[in-house]
Figure 1: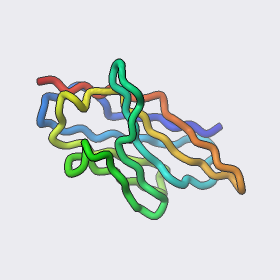
Figure 2: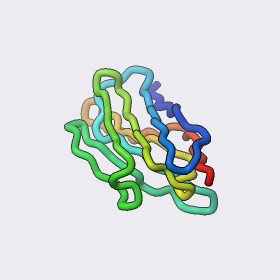
Figure 3: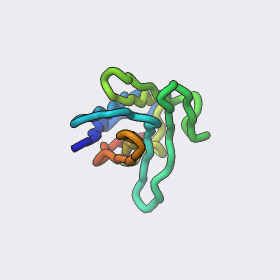
Length: 119
């Protein structure tokens, strides 16, 4: 069974940094796009950043220049380096990955990790 689990969340002051990781476990065949999403209380889940297997990235306007997504394909892990954090970045952060097994692709979500940015 394939699973993705996030780590690295926590409490940080505004202006600080955090690095999130999301590692896959189980019998991995191939992982295509990976990404990070977040959901703040009372709001819908929103895209933060995505990265293709070839390394092409895409960011939400709100995090451009502050967040960097990267991946280690050998470790089946995706990272999110978050700098210059703001209180409005407070949310549960979820990783997302497209796992491809032969001709079938399944999208997996991690359980989420809380990021809290204080004033």
